[in-house]
Length: 133
Image (tube, rainbow, N blue to C red; front, side):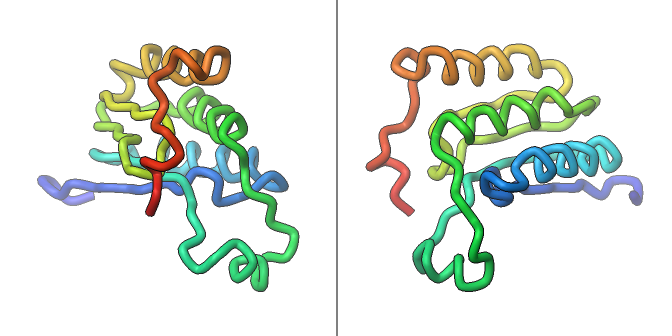
């Protein structure tokens, strides 16, 4: 990339659905590792026109539940090898707010995700009504 040009990337958690979640996560992390973006953010895929309309194009799509989204985030963060990327997962669609710099804050963010998986009642998650988009 050119000197002084900042790169920003957004990843949609859950975009692969249950069928290709691991592939989506693995390939997204691989791309981030290759590009080393200055800014990386995530949000959860949503269906403003309804899930059934989405399924017209992708009939076998099954959305991830909350725990599966956390597992996907854990896999994604674990696979990242970023040197100095600002990371934000604080969009209204996210149950769990994560903020940090990768690689400096990777382990603390992974700990937050693991707490959300193991003890969701203690993880400070957004209530479903707060995620309305």
